[in-house]
Image (cartoon, rainbow, N blue to C red; front, side, top):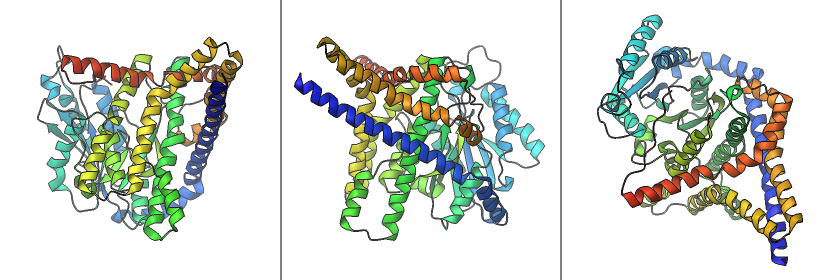
Length: 475
């Protein structure tokens, strides 16, 4: 019993510390975004950038499509045509696939996405008077999103005007801030053309008002991850790599910086990579789940910083629990391939720094917590209850509520800023907010369902000697 008490106290101390760190990161990320997005700051940047538009890099935006609705294609092209960037330096590439014709799910359709894309491109280019859009067709049935993108890059590489070319990827339902491309160009010029990778992070609030209470909880949970982990990790990596490049730090400072080093992943949409850098690292990893995550790890393990873009992409959150579980399973499946990326980097550079090795180990720990963390907490509640240590059980439940609820409460308190920063329709009512906060511990416990779903399916498919596949949901 004494051992249970000691372990419980230690567990609660660590949980409280982590909670405070996460709240600090969330507030810091919001403050940073508000500072960089302030009217005064943007006016200064825009005035200086207008005169430098001739120096802006050419940006190719790749949008892989498969079994899309015609209205979605038309809306996508119309939206991207309105991006605030010189049209002569913008190319929007829609990548179709042979799977559209010969794959599943196309029965009883008179037209395909290929027809919709061709029609929408003719209409949009005609209205613009500039050939901004183009379609590239992936000619194979096998393969996935990464294969589509790699093929399109290979086909168009001979048309790239110079070394100053960035390749970006978005989904057909992505609606990034219209200033995004300009902010990438501005930052690229500020870095004296040294910056080579950018990532725009997501706010999962686009369909918030139509979700059930538990799925609203999930939407906020995913958005919190952007502020708590993704933005601070990317900003921290950039700061540490920059300091290492410009100064010789004392030995102790280097060790402390090494312990804080983390691998940064890319998100499936909204990343901008310099063409020469993307081709140097072997383009997108194929035959693996979540190619975006692994691309980011490829860059991180080569000490190529991924800079955050301080403009968000407002996207939908899963509308059902099953969609959420499958989404998390795909992400977790991608994370399990990190060992291949590490071995690849180690093979290419046998003297890979100890900092990167530590960052790799830290990421493995994070993956383990994703799967086991909620189960450990549930096990603790069951053990203390069966041992009739009801005080510890009650304390665990209260701290569990505080661990998730405190972050949700702070988030709701900042709702007015969120609406201004993301241009989303996030205006929750007071009673609804209280209900979502009360449900937040359940969402944290559900966090392991996706990894469990992946592991269970992987084991079953290994037994039946089949490959793991995810169904493509139509948009």
